[in-house]
Image (cartoon, rainbow, N blue to C red; front, side):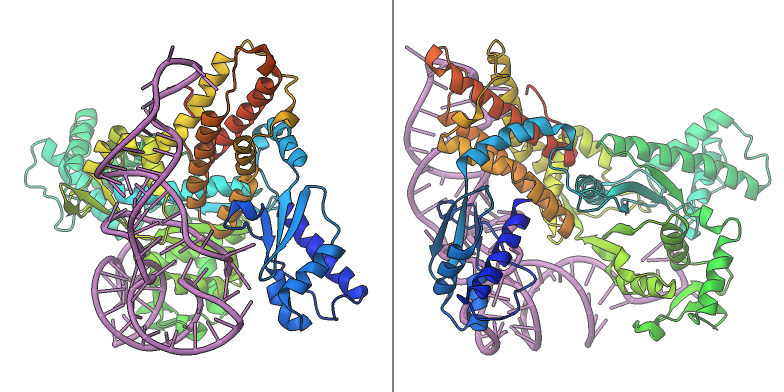
Length: 555
RNA sequence: GCGCCCAUAGCUCAAUGGAUAGAGUGCCGGACUUCGAAUCCGUAGGUUGCAGGUUCGACCCCUGCUGGGCGCGCCA
């Protein structure tokens, strides 16, 4: 990456200046800041390093800058260097290097923008993981988009990524779900005496599910002992719900590598093994009839119940066993869990759990996102599967479209609380910036169709000298940098802004530069511009692809 | 009471401790007889919630307020 080369050139320049006696001796900072100047006229890259060195060198920043510029060996991609008050060094990319990048992009193929930041380390991204007790509702949408895009970003950054859905098919909520399913099934067969539990799932979808099972299986499960019948109906209902989730997520272009069952954590004595490990490590206490995780001994605010006094494992027990499985059984180098902000209270105990398992807590990252407030008719809608008040992810995706939903949810940082107005989302879907970006792609396709008869294979990109052309190329070569930023910060919203700016530069280029011209005198530059437009198309496709969006050829 | 997150243009949101804080949207005004007007160009809009502090330099880091969201269970 060019910024890395620039940094080492600057560091080397400081060393050389010191050896020549232009700068006094001091330790060269390990991290050399390189950034994009706010004003493009100032250059493509800049470093404020001289301001930071002023104290060390006991010199004015501007004088340090002068010395440094004189002593630096410039990489070949730098065309011009200037010094600006109070001590910035500005670098401008060489035009011939810049235009050559068009060919580099065209020959990159599918790996365009791919980095080796991850060094092929294995990362698991676990996201959505909503309880399988009903259809996915809109509350899970942000989790889905964030997690899925994060996974793609990390893939592009050179990690070996695995996408996982954690199916909470154990525990007390599951039992209530089974009982609800059984009651609805029985009611469908006329047994009004069998009722949905007090804290059961009231949604209409459970009634439908009960009817479907009744139609398919008749009285069979009612003729069994009650426990067995409920279990059998419950399992059918669970399978149905999970199959539905597959479909709903697929409608957003999301596919997992693994659907991991919580129940499986309690098979083959695995859980006992982990409890032994924790006990031997001195992390367990027994009191009030329950087994506790001694988080306070690791600096936590309170201890956590692992096994309840009735002998059943609690949610945290599964969390421990699950992460033991992720790191120790399956050996992921790094794990990212995407959680809603309502789970932020669990962050410290996850850290303590990692310590207790003898794992480096930094290998586990919990990405938290602020919950989305849903509005309909100006009113805030509260979603709950238990009460059955819900707006499903599917109905919104069907109505607004996957691309628009994804872009909307992706374009804000995870820390921002956002409002999703359903009426507005439908009414204004045409104004969603995603269409602006897709239009840029469709426009390129249109230009290429129109210029089909032009032979651009020998297009000479060095003819690209118009400011709009160079601005576009500058934007195009930013892709790796944006992928790196998004991967390092685990913040995919940078992609959304980048894609918009890329589209904007393309539209501006289209305004200023005629690509396909009937004038024979324009043939050479036209061929070069076709190369440029093809390269831009590749970048647009790539960034849209990482965001999980389509790149339509026509709209 | 304690903890986490947030507060930036009318609205929705950006901005790795660096130069004149940017987009979209909305208002107003312009541009189709040539590759797509789902586009482009322009005007207006700011004490970055308040008060201190650190720094050569703060929207960004620290402290204290104010206001909002979310947590603090032998639920998940």
